[in-house]
Amino acid sequence: MAEFDDSDLPEPSLKNIIDQETLQWVFVGGKGGVGKTTTSCCLGVQLAKFRKKVLIVSTDPAHNLSDAFCQKIGREPTPINGFDNLSAMEIDANDDMEKMQQQMVESANAGSEDESGISALMAELTSSIPGIDEAMSFSELMKQVQSLDYDVVVFDTAPTGHTLRLLSFPTILEKALGKLMELKDRFGGIIGQASAMFGGGNPGQMQDMMLGRLEETRAVINKVNDAFQDPDLTTFVCVCIPEFLSIFETERLVQELSKFGIDSHNVVVNQVLFPEKDAEELGEWLDANTASLPKEAQDICAKMMARKKMQDKYIGQCFDLYGDDFNVTLMPLLDYEVRGVDKLKAFSENLINPVDLEES
Image 1 (spheres, rainbow, N blue to C red):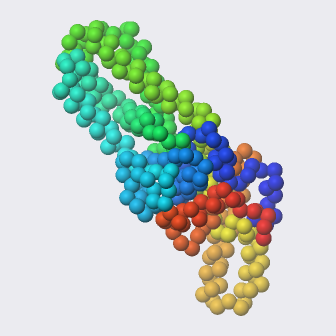
Image 2 (image 1 turned 90 degrees about the horizontal axis):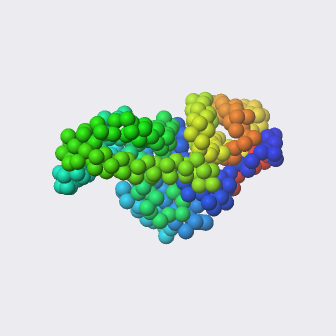
Image 3 (image 1 turned 30 degrees about the vertical axis):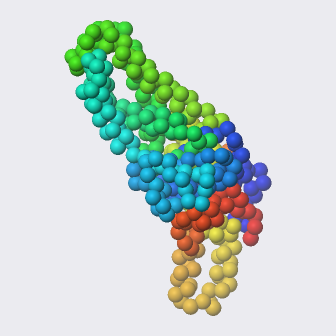
């Protein structure tokens, strides 16, 4: 925008993420259809220039990484064509949960008498406590990702509501397990007898085994929670487009992230028409040249100008809301889809080399 003074604002790019070498987890999220997958892939491409091993993980049930990179990507880390240090994987929390419960049932059938009782009770717990199934599935995911040897992991998340629930799981599970641990002193005998009813042996021994299993899960959750709330290790990139509903959703997302104690200081605004141009400047050109344009061209330009004015209004609001504290990056609307490694590489440069808002 021609007269926008950005001299005192944080740099309008994601270069701060590239430069922060301690980062291990980068979440990319926002409303549906705003370009989260493209942003995640582009960020992964840029990180691969400076990190030894980078992984992009899609947690959205409607996976798009395969479409973005134009290659088949599965549940295991898949090397991206054209890179020797960038991989991607697509996971489904619901499938993971079903597998985990199936494993519990199998271990209940195949294990010793005590172990089978514990596994049966744990399987019953995971299917009866609201939300704990997804939370435990999430803990399994984090254990899997932590076991992989990657310098940084970029999460291409599901739309906002699902993502906020995902990020709240460590807190939910910690509270749930905390309550269970409190109950052990008051109802320890009952817990032991209940697990014995599921096929176990000695109630005291059963109680100790079950609490040991819960403590193990709790330790993993605490570790994940601490990592999420450490700005040196974790950050969240909010993605939006210059429209009311998307800006509104982004504000809600930023507030929720703040409640969870998760660092967020980057906003990417996608699909921006001529980010280096100002609507007023374009309007002056159009007024001076309208008479020489065919009627159809006049209609097309009028619609484009209406869209540009609307976008400028919401981009202005975005800078009003976040400009002082956030790195707000404007990404241009292109004439083509960003698919395939070559186009992702080219488009990713816009994340690092900011648009000069003072250029005309």
